[in-house]
Image (cartoon, rainbow, N blue to C red):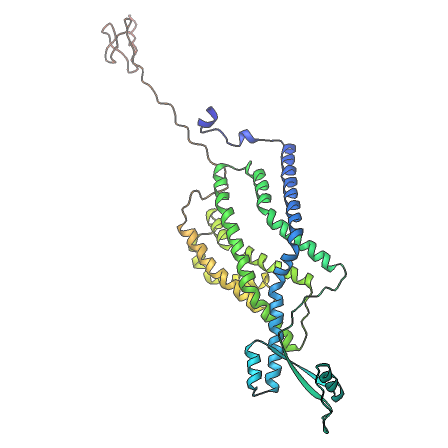
Length: 376
């Protein structure tokens, strides 16, 4: 009970451990995290194929769109005025494919369809047959025999890590929290949920908004150069996981600004004064963190610039508890004990005033009897 009421009691005094005990606690937390990731990996093995189809769907849609645009551009260059039937095919989303056949091949094709027609008297040396079909399903390729298995294992491991991340954070937090003061834990309780939320928002924006424009831009160069796009699945998996990760990390900007403000390195006034330089730095960082395309660069910079000014609002209007969030709290000041004045009492317990002695004699300024001068 004394420890709870004593203001000078150190809250870390009860949790002090030796270096070996710290290592044992760390090893225990890491083993628990490894077990959590392993269990998540087993779940990932069951849904790894669904995850691969999920992350490859944007690229396959981009490849189908590229094929449709390429064939339609070729058709429009050949046919300036499409017929009513061809316009109906275009409205239905079909794409034309042209095949060139010799007269004999054309007659064999008719016979295969059950059409018995004799060869006309005059036929050109080559016939063009235009077939309207739906865009072909785009497929990613694998260049090695082991590529499919390695991609499946990587995808399952990613799923397992994501599913096990709450447990991993909890086990690591139990190890770190033992060495933190209560006021430091309050900051972690605020920063951790906000950081996770910003990371998820950044990853979602990257996958569902930015990725579509990045794929469209990158594949457009294949059409411009006349190169057939055949992406490899292992390269695409690394790319599609890296882009949301970079966006999630970049979206931590408001929290970094708030942290620097709370420890006294910067302030809202400094952020507002140098906002032009900050926007320039944002564009440079966006160029480093994103692939080599202007769409993702502009998307990240366009998101980080409002977040920068949002960080200024956080620094300005969020209440401040302590400007030194990770410093050791100072003990309360000790008040000196109050002085009690003691008045002299007589032999019978009566209070004696300072002006006179009990016998009526004179007293000194300290209250004692004045000494008599020696007699000559």
